[in-house]
Amino acid sequence: MGYGTSFKPDVYISKKVFNSIYDLEDQIATKKGYIEDTKQNILMYIAATPKDIFNEDIYSLESLQTHINSLFESLEETIYLVNVLEMFREHILDNDLNIKDFDPFKQEKYE
Figure 1 (spheres, rainbow, N blue to C red):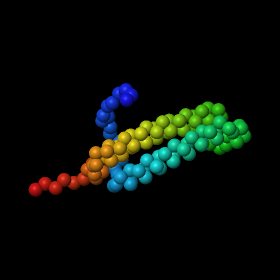
Figure 2: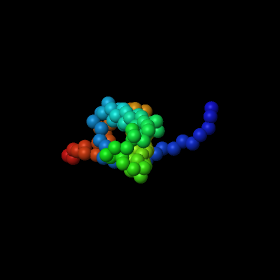
Figure 3: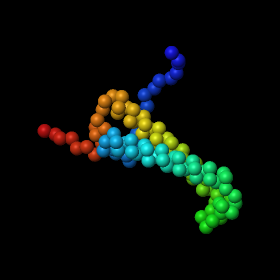
Figure 4: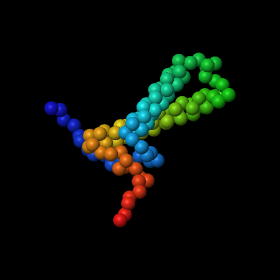
């Protein structure tokens, strides 16, 4: 058996509510699709010639750098979110929990 570090993260997912495990999995798939699209977009810039790149939105090297930086920032944020959502899915499935128990808008009935 190998060795490693085990920990239990305390994670807060801002402004996300899921109706079902399928809703959560759909969100993960959508974000993974965005990641792949962004990777392809970045690869397009690598292979492109200047006449292919420059247009009304990207008109100088500075604007190109700004655009590429925003793609990388968005990619980093989305990869992080996918990792957190996958940890949440694993937590739900491994512990046989109901995803509705994590709904912040759930109304408790008081008797």
